[in-house]
Amino acid sequence: MQLLSHYRDSLPPGSPLRDAYAQPAAAEGGLLPAAGLIVLGIVMLASGGILAGVAAVLGGGDWGYEIYKRSEAADAARAAWENRRIFLACTEQWTP
Image (cartoon, rainbow, N blue to C red; front, side):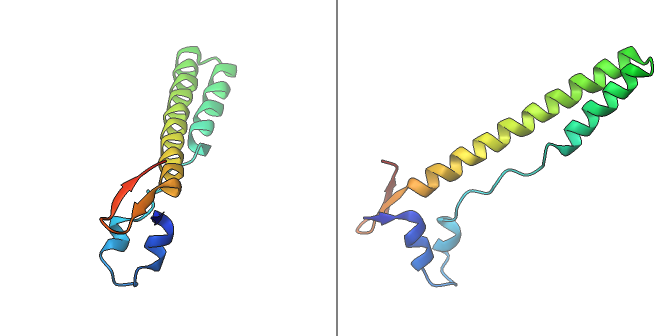
């Protein structure tokens, strides 16, 4: 029995199992564009564009929340991968 990450690192560089046992990818995207949309909405609200400003603030908030949820899910998948074990006799995997 061995940590999956250690087993993967011990495989030769050309092994097809390196890709199969690879760590899940990190979430793509950042919160900066969503924050920029929120700031743009606040500027629009201050300059008198109430409907467009509210739409931009709500859209930016929703976009930021979706990015945050994807990031949390990716972090949880990566943490679970770090804790996975592999039984070397049959290559069965499990998380304790």
